[in-house]
Amino acid sequence: MSNFTFSRSEARVREAATIVPGGVNSNFRLGVAPTPLVFERGEGPYLHDIDGNRLIDYYLALGPMILGHSPADVIAAAHGQLDKGLLYGGQSELEYEAAHRVSAMVPCAERVRFAGSGSEAVQLALRLARAVTERLTVIKFEGHYHGWLDSVLWSNGTPFDQVGPEESPTKYRASAGQDPATGENLEVLSWNQEEQIVSRIAKGDVAAVIMEATMCNSGGIFAKPGYLEAVRDACTKHGTILIFDEVITGFRVGPGGAQKRLGVTPDLATFAKAMANGFTVAAVAGRAEIMDQLSSGHIMHGGTYNAQPVAMAAAIATMDRLVQSETFEAMERNGTRLMNGIAEAFAEAGLPATVTGYPQIFTVALGLTEPAENYRGLAKVDRAAYRHFTAALLGNGVRALERGAWFLCTEHTEDVVDETLAAVRKTLADIGPDLAHLRA
Image (cartoon, rainbow, N blue to C red; front, side, top):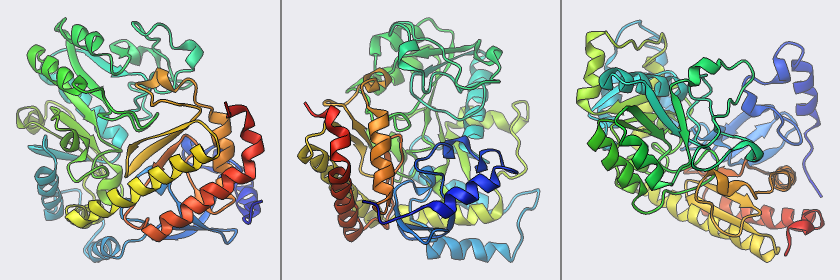
C-alpha cells in the first residue's frame, strides 16, 4: 500500500482551477493520476511537493533537467548574469559563446540561431526549408511530435482505429480549434518504411522531411539499419532539406545529440530542453548556406526573449558540464542498469513489457513482447494498465511519466537507481492482481 498521500496537491489544483483552467498551465500536465502535483522545491534527482513527499523524479520536467534539479554551477552562472541585466533588446557576448559551444558539439551546426521554445525552433526550421527550396510540401511521420502549433500538430497521437492504411496514413488533427488549412501542404507517412519515403522524396517537390531521429515522444523506437542513411541520401539527391527534431535527444543522448550518436547529419536540427537545464532556451542549427539566408532579413525570425542573457549563461554552464566525458559515462552506466532492472522486474512479475531507447531517455511499453518499429507497433500497449502502474509507483515514491518515458539525469546515481528498482518491484507486487489480464 502507498506510504504517500497527495491530498493537498489535489485540493490546491482544484482551488486553482477557478483562475487557471484545469489548475495547470500546460495540457500535458492534465489528467495525471492520482492528481496533478504542486511542488515546493527540487534538488538533485528529487522533487518535494506540498504534501511533504520526497519523490525520485523521472519526469525531469519532460526532459530539460539533465543535470538534476538546482545544479550549483548552472544556478551560479544565472545568478552572475542577473546582476548585469535581464534583457537588452540587443546582443550579448553570452549568446555568441553559447553558439560556439553548440557548433563545437553538434555535427550539423555550422550556424546557430536561438529561439524561445522547441515549438518556435521547429517553425523557423520549416520556414527556412520552404524559403531555400522554393517548395511548400513538408513530410512528417506518425507518432512524431514537433510542437503544439497548428502547422505540425498532426498525427502525433492518432487513435489506432483511425490511422488508415500504412501506405496512406490518415492526416489526423490533434486539437479542437486547429486550423485545417495549416495541413494543406503537410503529408504524413509511416516511419521506418524506407521505400515509401524514398519514392515520395524522388518526386522532387518536397521542401523538408522532419523527424525525430529516434522516436522518443511516442516510444523509444530506433530507425531500422540504413533507414536514416537512405532518407539522407534521397534528400541530398532531390534537393530536400532534412530536419532532425532533437528537442528531446539533443544534449541528452550525447553531447552531439542523436545525429552524432547515430552518425547521420541533417541539414537543420532543432534543440531545446536539456541544453540549458530548465532555462528557456531553444535553437536551430544547420548548414551555413541555409542558415545564412536569415542574414538578409527576407526570411523572418523574431522573438523578444530569444537569447535572453540569463538563459544564455545557464546554457553555457550546462553545455560545459555535458561536454565532459564522465558526465555521459555515468548516465550511460546508471541508465543501462535502470533499463535492465525494470525489464527484469516486469519479467519476474510475468508481465509482457519492452524497455527500449537510450539510457538517458527510454520507454517502457507494457503489453508488448517485441519492440515496436513505428507508431503502429504501439497499438497493443496497455496504456490503462501502465497508467495504473505509474500511479501506484508514485505512491511508493517514484515519479514516472504515464506515457512510458523515463528521463535520466546525472543525479540518478547507483543508490538512487537501487531505490527506484526496489520501488518498481514493490509496486508490481502491490498491484499484481490488477494486471492479471496481461499474463499469458
